[in-house]
Image (tube, rainbow, N blue to C red; front, side, top):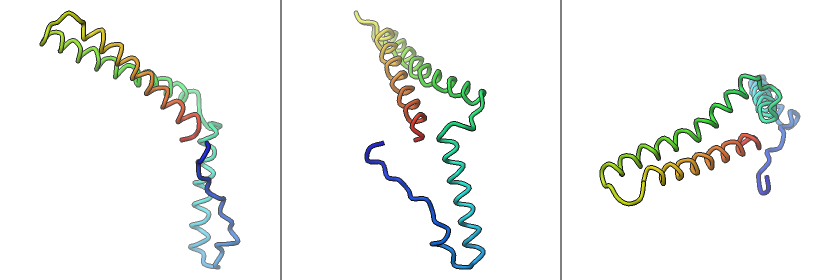
Length: 112
């Protein structure tokens, strides 16, 4: 990403004070950094995790759509008028849901 800060890799020689607790801490940080790199590359994702991501994207669109329909239906029943709030808010819910899903997929694609 443009303008994103990168964290330099820790150099074990810089932090080696001879204390075993520092070495253990450094190993723990390195393990977590490696796990994060693997997660961001997507190399360790299973088929079920990919199916789960499709499910999350589906819910990201479905929930705002259903909320728009429910709110529109309530407005139409409470204050009837010439325009259908249900249809208008259905469209707004679909647009918001698609935008939300697109943002989520973009964030996952670049590793947050």
